[in-house]
Length: 349
Image (cartoon, rainbow, N blue to C red; front, top):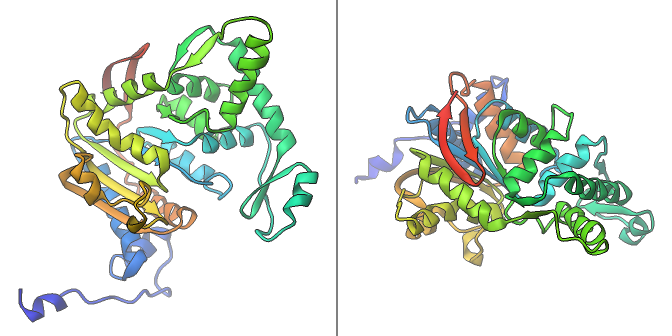
């Protein structure tokens, strides 16, 4: 390369007098720098995945305080408009979606507050919001009672969460919208959440105290098998990681699990992440896609991008870009044909 090769793409300054929409702002980010350009790169990779004629299966990984952060409808819209095909989430997000669907809210507060006083009032703080612990307890018991009504047997978290979604009558709910469109939702660490607390209440009060065996069991290994089949039966896959944590590793390890069944499908073909964690701490949430390539979790020629930005800022910008450009138009939904724990096929509708 020559000296002039480094000076072919000048920075173009953002002109807010001309920008009217989120999509126009993100388009402008393509010519700016630092994390704004990385947000634009993530949006472009997402756009490429949606326009890929081979129709990749796009899996959304969710972690962090996203419901408290006001992203409930943003995530719901990703499902409603068909720009994600499957979801892997921490339990707190799904529980708080269900909590909101029951008519309960999060309330703004200061992050500098008397937390001992909050405890006296039975209010729980999530950074700069509070929730009603009494309503949490009511919701836990609702989940326990729901479990006691279910047909005895072994379930994956996908099956249980679809049943939970069908309990909801709230069009802005993540679980309701996923159940409506048959979008599979997995929660590999479901016990590490208030859903898990409700199911523990069911286990103790409805089973142990009455001398009964558990009527339902949620099998996390069945989850592994089910999501592995999605990877095996997809021509291509894309991954969207909001924060990181368990959902990120879970979606990435599907590529490794396929090798267990002599079906090396390769890594994900598209990958984007919004994170505030940095790779030099050695955590999974901050690890780069290049590191993931050493494990075979991301393909050699994958289109990938990372923006180091807090999710309540980054996700609305990227999803706003996708929706305002109507990149969902003409993209058929996937239908997953399940028979118990077997995925018989994936069809487009």
